[in-house]
Amino acid sequence: MKMIFPTDLKHIKKIEGLDNVELRNLPQLYRADAEFSRSFNNHAINLILKNLPTHPEFKYVSIDSRTHMLMRGMYPCIPGWHCDDFYRASKDSQPNLESVLEEAPATHYMLILGENSRTEFLKKDVELPSPRELLEQFGDKKPFYLSYDEVIDQINPETVLVEPKNLYSFGPLCFHRGKPATENGWRFFMRATFSNHREPKNEVRYQTQVYTMGRVSW
Image 1 (cartoon, rainbow, N blue to C red):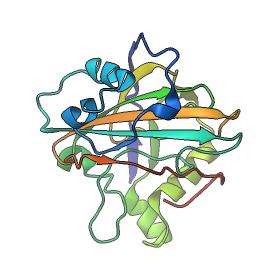
Image 2 (image 1 turned 60 degrees about the vertical axis):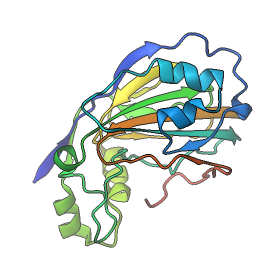
Image 3 (image 1 turned 120 degrees about the vertical axis):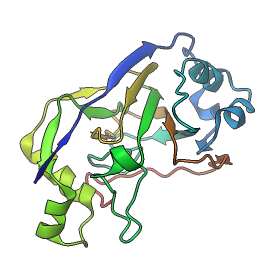
Image 4 (image 1 turned 180 degrees about the horizontal axis):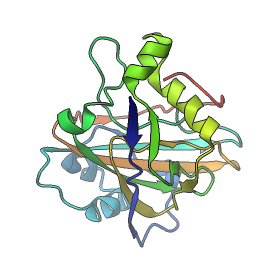
């Protein structure tokens, strides 16, 4: 049985006032709530938070941010097409994509600063094998996202790159991927996830890795 993965990327707005931000000085947050994020009194972080829509239907907002110093060809995240679902089957840690919309609905917002690595999204909805089909074909040893990455590359889909300083929203089944840096320089990424299951932890990141391979297992 095939499964439709909706491309629900939406442009929300361009956020004015983010010019000349010292990216190297932005705080790196892991699953931070809004109050903890504001406590750093950082102009750029607070400005992005101010521009986030409200979602009273969800209990939590969980904010992640990462700052990278990228050299040409480096990836700021694990390479390959994937979804930001944050919902895994407890048995094998595979993403529970078939039931995520019912059991763990969420809305993500993202923004990047820096021109050298712009996140790439599918431009149109895509029909792909369901996780059950992947299990029948490959068993539970091959990560779903490695299979989806290979399948999506084979169909050569239309894609769109996000624009820096612009706020976008997308859902848990929206495929996207990080791009290798086109030039040396700093990159900042921030994502806010509204949900009923991703409870904040209010942690600070002190190290963020980069990747140099074009395809890595999730």
